[in-house]
Length: 354
Image 1 (tube, rainbow, N blue to C red):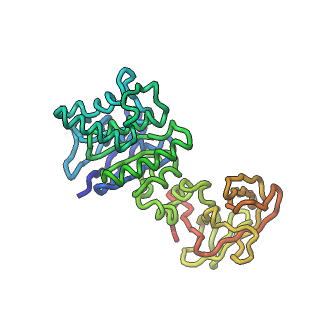
Image 2: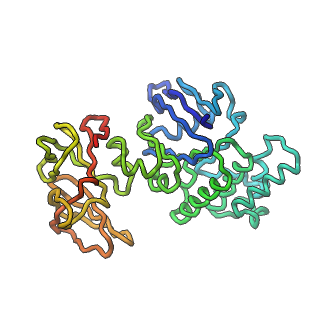
Image 3: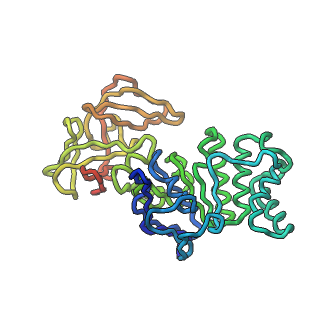
């Protein structure tokens, strides 16, 4: 029985705006799931529906097979962590941790034990007597996380918990969340718009766009075999290169004719060719050619560089190992092996063909 199940969940506001559209999802017990999508995709609304902070227009939320319709948030046996820590400024770190278990009406000994355990797990013991204004951003977010963990909820919901932190702190707390999940084994559902963060954190990745689930599965599976054009273009930095064109007689030709490829196993007609940036080879005679392009700019990124190109009016990008030997204005040959070619339907759904 899944810990969390959503059945045909929808949320439409009085003005007619649909934030969540017929979402069905199962999260197995003990999974660290990450929901990712662009701003305004409905992911935070979905989290609030699960928490009971908003009421669904239709559908239901179930924990361990029990429907939660009408159950108030404080009785759903979950905890929620937001982007801002929202600590009580007049309480110490110890007091803020203790406030998380106060609604549970535990005995003094058990409450103190949970506070001590949360402090130990998150390395907060040296900070227990400090006030929130004496904490760094990362320390404050760890206190907020500890306050949630002290409740020992069946489900921990995290709404953009790392978004307000700098890159170094985000990396540190990503590792902290992974370590805590491994140690505690609880079910976590985290929401983020940062697809790199999602790929790094998740056991199970949930991609959402315009209130609709796009694909659910292990992160690497979604990255390597995206179910549609949206997932292909959204996951990855940069996203997958996509060329619209037409296939006939085992040959694909992109609009404008700059990109061509041999094709097998997909029907004739309009379609879209996709190639990941790291799979797009430049001036490599060992792989089948796709066409030619001109370098428009180069982004050095330490161990490699992203080379941006114009291929017959279509923009694309390739990753090149550092030091990068390509310069703006260079004419290059683009190539890729057959196994690295992705084929999608040209219609609005853009489903994967092969």
